[in-house]
Image (cartoon, rainbow, N blue to C red):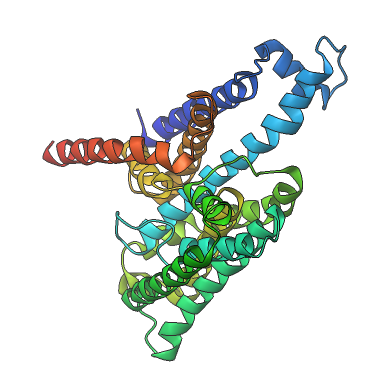
Length: 339
């Protein structure tokens, strides 16, 4: 079997698995809706059908679960694509999407909005603005030192991330322990509960555009993964291409954190799963990572809503599953190398 045919089978299988996860997520919960009724409710928006469902079913599927599911799938795809891009560009399999301080900046912005009682929408907007501002500051530091190397950019990310974490600590210290501190802690654990249609409509076009740009640059990401000198010798404008990839990956991460709060492990382990299936080629690695990331977040969110009477923060589940999964991935890669 050729690699092209194998990848096609993998993509079809992952797409069907994602579709199945979406149907399960829309149908199963504290208020179960039969699968056929769920499909009918969704298709009714495209082609009018005779209504065999009640208003409560339609409201649960369309207004409660669907925005949350779409947001979750988009967040998973964004984090996975960002992780795969960063790992390829920086040639480090342990790199995660918060490498340049975006998550620390977003958490600081969200905490500031919570302390100021600015409301849910402003929490998400300030998280987005501060996340992007943190990455902007990270990119200014190498310019100040006139050193545009990848190592300098990573070191700048560590510095900015530490500074933002210090500001975040100050905001937690001054927050009201009865209400504000609890809200800050819960937000940093990650949840799709606050994803509503207006914020989703505002951020989804930009996130999809950033994903599209990364997909168009997949072969250039392959060349960058060879190293800066090799890429330059092949005619690639290293600074421009790397900057554009980082910009898109950072925007995806900032928007994802803005929608859901900080969710660990998805951006780190998803590209490793994809590599086991498709290999290192970014042309197949990136789409596989996007599909696997979307599947993981959709499945995790369903578990978070239904395992107990209260909703479990997503980072707790991703941490419990992600750490053992990462060990399994390392063992699988070790066996692959030995073979």
